[in-house]
Length: 138
Image 1: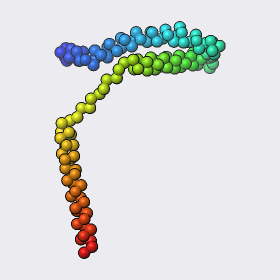
Image 2: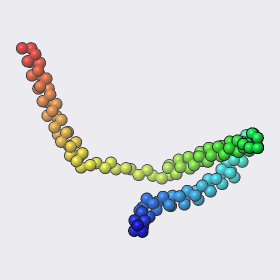
Image 3: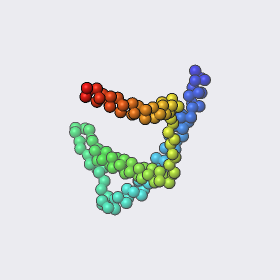
Image 4: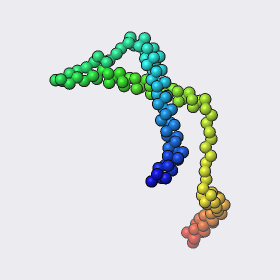
């Protein structure tokens, strides 16, 4: 069981996932700082610093802070848009790798045979049609 666990951990995709999670955590703090310290104040200038966090309603002893939820949704949309812009910018900087089409040798062989037989089949079909028309005339 220990060997199976070691094999599982040693797989490339598990290590790649671990690195992705770590880098994602660091990247999250950068994006959150960008949104909270730069973008939100900029938006606040244009919309007059609207803050929904004091919007609440009460039912009995329960207090529902739906304004804080609205603020969270707005923050999420801003963060998602910033991440979209960053990814779009990075994709323009990074050259795209061309993906080579992997062709199964059997499929290639069958395709070559089909292409080689196709002209003969077309001629045979024309001859058959001509013979059928001749027999119909009789």
